[in-house]
Amino acid sequence: MLDRIDRGMRLLAGFLAIMGGLALIAIILITVLSVSGRALLFIGLGPIRGDFELVELGTGFAVFAFLPWVQINRQHASVEILTMQLSGKINRLIDMGADLLMLAIAVLLTWKHWDGTLDKLAYGETTFIIQYPIWWAYASGLAGAIGFVLTSFWCVVLSARALLTGQDQAHGEMQH
Image (tube, rainbow, N blue to C red; front, side, top):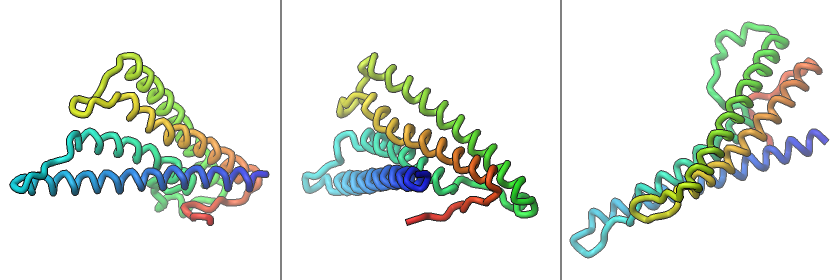
């Protein structure tokens, strides 16, 4: 049962990361086309209207979309120079504490992001140039934020299991 949940969480995190990667590719294409259009004004081309607004939207989504992948694969920055010298049990306790803190941060971030989305929706604010509702950008980030909460919770479960069984977890290893 736990293996199926783990596989599902990894699939969710992987899917969100791929979507974030596709968003970054779209951002790159928009930027290249817009800059090229500016350079080719003399032949009648021009920049993409609202290019920076589209880049903001895509970047916000991508950042949130990558968080679950980083968390599930334990790829956050860590300082191992000290922990290498500590026992397995101490390292499992550190992992548990770090995962609990990350879960708290994920929940807080998602909660406040949800509040921001509702606020933008209520006020009907739109972007200046292409006039898309700003709440769309906020809502797109919520998918990654919710995935971040789910994967952070799962990492707490994995850390608790490692602490109880005395078996170390793999850190930063992708499983296919």
